[in-house]
Length: 367
Image 1: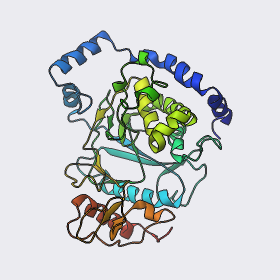
Image 2: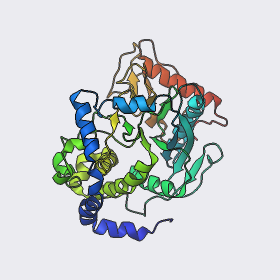
Image 3: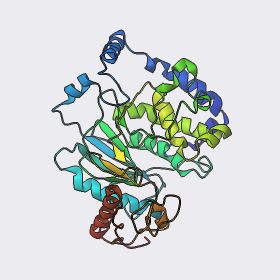
């Protein structure tokens, strides 16, 4: 490994002390703002112009107008067939929209945290990093994501000032501008990330002296557009916090499959980084039915319908598209389109999957 595995073993042994106290003590000063900054925040808040939870502050938005601020898209993935075919589709649409008007999309890297190259190295720009030491992730593969970013940021030459953290099951549907500002990253708000509901558990990692629990944004790490210098500070804390959460039975039970998302939200708050929440960042079919001005389709949920176009969520439909149906390999080309009456978002998703698979060389079902 590029980093000693002994660090993690020691960390796990003393995680409660190291993460909860040492990390916090080391970064407390990052929460302190200058008197001038506090004055600006109060003034803009009083005039309703400053609301980092919904939009970029007006002054920063105007300052960025006319400037082209490229961001680097970073996609974390494993070498499993399930993520390989999703990554290929994601990269196809990235290339399609990268150079169109309105785009501030720069370079692209698949951060492959399997520890060894795979057969997509020539198709997708890829950097190979190591997984966590054996046993640390306890079968929760996503725990390797923050550790992958720590390694990538330390070894890669990234020309862009900003980074978009993306996932394999993202399909870009239009050119993406840089939604972040100098001080405020942009993130998508998830309805199931609820810091207030889980305040008791989160106070193990974000104690009261760090501020109100509302400082922890209702987000995960993806999609997020963030300044590279901010992510370089957050990533090690994000990795350590996530490992600590997984090692704590109460926290692991409370957060389940979204644990690493809470890890990122807490780590950002510990570093005093607050995100602009962009509901227009992406949609999640079948619950989001219209694309409108959104930038990404996130196909994390199964889409099940009867032949009349009625959603049968929770029950396998007579027509369905669910990425989990292709857990062992790629879907075939030319998937059947949904029946009449199915929402635009689902129809567009399937059409875009079909277009990508029709044009990606050497696409083979089940591989």
